[in-house]
Image (cartoon, rainbow, N blue to C red; front, side, top):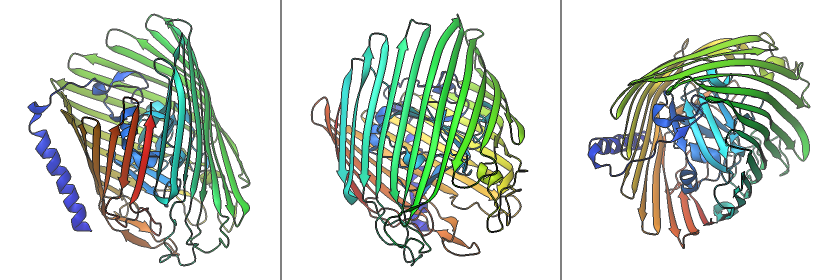
Length: 615
């Protein structure tokens, strides 16, 4: 398997080398996308000093992916672990950082759990999603806690043009069924969209019974219903009022590695939801104000042998005011304030169930000929542990189609309610004296963009101190971690052919022991090619990773084991039956490889999905 993984890496490098050399072959110019997440201001992608990837509506649709983890797996710097098939618990590791070190925003709203610190990305289906912006690297100076590894902002669908309907359906392996329907557009000064979807699969058995013989070997099915809506009214060119809502309700059948589950009635019910009201106003020429009130909710209810065993609910209430002031033709000032209240409701008797965070932030972006500058500062004051100050300074230099960039930033991750307020049980409890985890990140980049090509080579060095260790009787600030490495991304459009490739080389390790962090590979990446032929569109991608270490699923005390490297091939085809109706086919894990993302958990083998899409 190591040889196959190495071969895949070499193929990726060869594909990059063969396509980077003949720059003159690019045949058409591409529009410079506008992004907002990297600076909280609208900015051309080519001017971003952070490493940003944009996934638009066409890419999301063409991927054929049902959920967010499936879509993100091919992106540079992102590793996904998952305890089974669609809907099972997933973790996102950005540039080797922890699963709660990446902030997930949905239309600017936090929906993370205050008890774990992570967001249930496995409950976010893609039928409602129009665009995703992925920012890698420390950006706590813009968003506060949890952005040690980066920020992923997801934008739900909004209406465009004359009101119209869309409908799509898929069916395939493991009795998988998906239906999505929506209606949206512009009418007068009002823009709206409403989207609903249903996903169902019988799934596969999550736990490998050869490793955990006591586990129930039945298939673990998943059901999800998602609804989203957006409404925006423009009173004139300067004043706009908008509302957005989203809810995802998923039910997953679960296994237990230790045989505690004696019936088939074992499941978890997850709900992610958000609601936001926003007012966008041009106060005077050059001064844009954005005022937003939002509520983001994460809820998990688990059942064992048909009886409720646990429930955890987090409410994130936030009020934010952001201001964008143009100081000149290419200079902009950002300043704002936020108040976040987090409340936890649970059958676990936490010693504290609420915290408040008051934040102030400011920033500057400027262009001076060939020079770019970005600076940000933020202060977050927590009611339970004090304050955290973060900052970023970045510089870029442009020479024709090439650009060099450098940045230094600091970030932090606040201790969770599990870390600080877990009640005493079996000799273990939370530690209210914990300090936040803190990070310093250095990043150097070289970028090329011209015609239909782009090339990004980035070096990153992220050093995290006061990492929270579970400890023996309570969590403690103990570990220091260093994660350094390189990201290489390439894309080229030549004629009707699109080639993309991503390669990450990293060394995530504990500074004291030198031991690599679990579930992180040193090398992973993907190569994808898409070809249009009249009414047909064909696609193929290879994803690969070298070996990783993990903790044995059932061994106590903890015992490290090796997860072998892998390479999987996914293929797709789409055919336009007419201008509005499209037939799609996707095959994942074409060669039916037996791969493991978590020790003791199964991953679906070859799967087939056939779909029909109407717009």
